[in-house]
Length: 351
Image 1 (cartoon, one colour):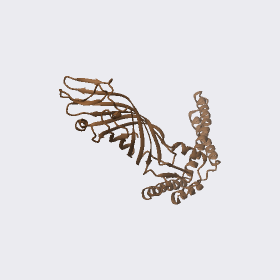
Image 2 (cartoon, one colour):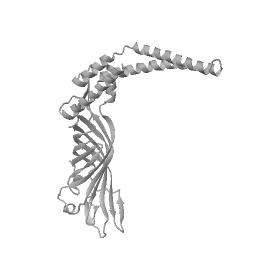
Image 3 (cartoon, one colour):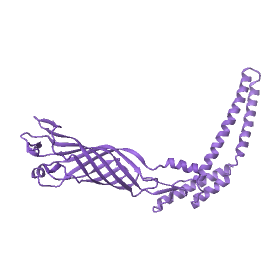
Image 4 (tube, one colour):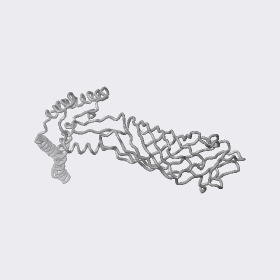
């Protein structure tokens, strides 16, 4: 019996080596046996182990009760310590025999299990999985259905347009985003996932050469020169954004456990994504700062577009994404200052 267990262990190890070679060499094989031991063999051994554990536990309870009686007799000096040791030994031997008999009666066919592992390790053959095993695998390898934290930072760029002041004095501009993104894999074997969420976006345009933004009496906005040397001059807008799109995981492989169960892990590897987005402005803040001026104007309407929308493409490696984003809406509404549209490049995490 011990020799058979050793043989089975060697076959399992051999199966691990065979399958490791298959994964590393046959990269185009979509049906990769990533389980190193036959699922059927694993299932039968687990069932047998559970049955043995139940038998041993039940018999041990009975044995402990008899040994407790012997200890009581010893404490009451009804028997000697030598007699107590002999009785305990006899009890242990009797229950060991009973345990062996009950385990034998289970009818576990180790030869058949070894044969199944041989077929799996050498030939890749396996028997159909039981409903219980398939149910457990479905719980273990669920399709992605999760809500992730999201963080993004990008550089905003604007092509030159009609307003020469903005062409000449627009400085470094950036966009910071944070929120939650919902990921939903189409199904357990699909390389595609749906993306949507709710994101706060802080868009900041900066102005150089001591220029700052002001709203004129006619409702238009303009850049004017300050008599002070400005250390800060920027207009920050806060938008509530909703993205929606899909991501295709190019390098994720379809994996199989036996012939009855398949899944795909899309959490790692290279992926490309495309999404649309839209959002509404919540607030704006015109920040101007010098040695003598400290201004934060949140009340004035600087004619930023109240609604923005656009498209984004993403190249992802694991959880890190490089993206390019183009607004289809103008940055300022109704051409009251300029009609240019934002183009953005950056990094995000969790998308």
